[in-house]
Image 1 (tube, helix red, strand yellow):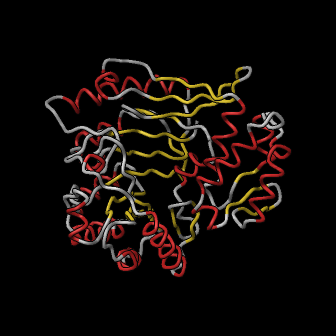
Image 2 (cartoon, one colour):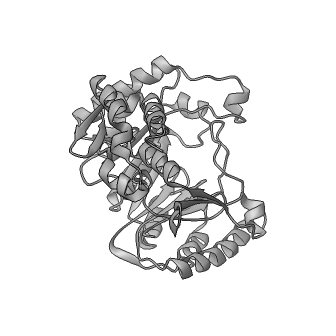
Length: 372
């Protein structure tokens, strides 16, 4: 295990589109969270002592924690970091200033993921964001001045959104990584209750604009919704998409760890939400048999520009992957949705845009008797 995710569930507000596990602060709640986190970290470290190549503190809003709380969070993580470790903290503009960012840097963070979402005041209000565009600009600039690698989040496909202007604002700030994804209307969220629905045509148009604008500026679309200058890719997220081993701490955090048991390739661990996690309830465990592991590896790997190494996947899963996918892969190649690079199956831009259809066809081929 060389990668670790820590979930911080606390947020100053709950955005109307958010379906992540988030809660507001309550009396003694953060202290109880940190106490439980310390015990969980010690247990995981005993089994997987590292060292870590990436550490990602996500949420929620980790930057909403007070200075002393952040200090304790980092102090209770017993893992040693490699010399070139990537240490990311999710930050919302409005929860930090230059002094706080300097403190975060001194704790060992070298990369911040900034939840800007939009530079338009009207859209920030629509999304329930508390910061202004001016604060977003200032936070990005301050983070860069302090030497952080900055990743900027933008939501595409919003009503009456000038997406080209949004992207050019991000580029004007000189960031090396942009996550540009569409708004998902998840069941049970205020947006879903209000009857909001996505516009697939608008989303497709905005994705095309993002490819053009960011690509022309030298940012490579290395994943469906992520663009980076070479060398600035999120190494932690790449571990997810490549289906490596990673650990998870905190309420609703997930982990993926190889099993080494007969008939099982790996196991997925999912922690319960905060109240049950605080009470010590163990994670739910799902064993991934070879077929399920292969399906997940293909689904995740085809999100990436680099695609999937079929020979390596066949060796890890023990399945005849190349044989099972030969006919379907050929069809998708003829449609221009996939390409071959040696043993790798690689998505085109169109294939990335139609990823759901591509994956369903791949899965269907894999589930035939010859594939399974």
